[in-house]
Image (cartoon, rainbow, N blue to C red; front, side):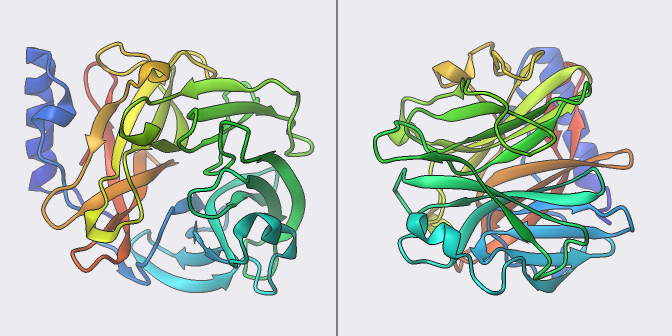
Length: 324
């Protein structure tokens, strides 16, 4: 497990001072390094779920979706591919690549569900698919079909899915990358597919090539928190990805950042960015693990390798998250 360190104490003190003086925690604090992870730690666009039988299942972007398991959230082992026999249904979107992107795993109604994307770099001809498995093991996943797709003329991009189940039991899928930003649709819990034709605009950016993507919505203490990435991924140590957050009392928004700027107007409060030898930390996912809130993401090393990052989240006196 991740251990609290002296850095956590420093962060708490800085956060308290920031609250007193009206500063954002992100601007006042020194970002922590990723917590200790060992074993198979290469990862891109990670998602993690706590298994009902104990331990953890993690999935990442890769050919057929890369799976890893861990007993303690520290040591990770390779666990094969979700689809070892290929995914012919996705090839119309991948430009011939076997890679599937940005899986989102959760455990719902006695089975694992995984939303994932098929696309090619820089294209908005994309689709989000749904698969399920009772065990989560490699080769056990059944594809349930396409959930939503975008075209080269859609003006939005159907990648980076994230399923959120509200306290009242509603299902919502958030997704999006660049173009006109982050979108949200309602999901029918019985099918895992769209409940209606309405699409909500959640966030949009108007600088740096409109670079906002990788949304993740997490409910905590009466707010829905929209975690997302700004700027540019996938350039190794030159990546400028950074992790942002905003919040709303209702899942469909409006979301605002700490300064009150709406995410539809480019708002977002930075909580993690490049520091030391950690480059481009982004594509966030958050899980509740006992009494802890855990942030999972990827970052790049000086050599350009994509690595799994895990830290804990805490909440300041104004109910804004910070990383420690």
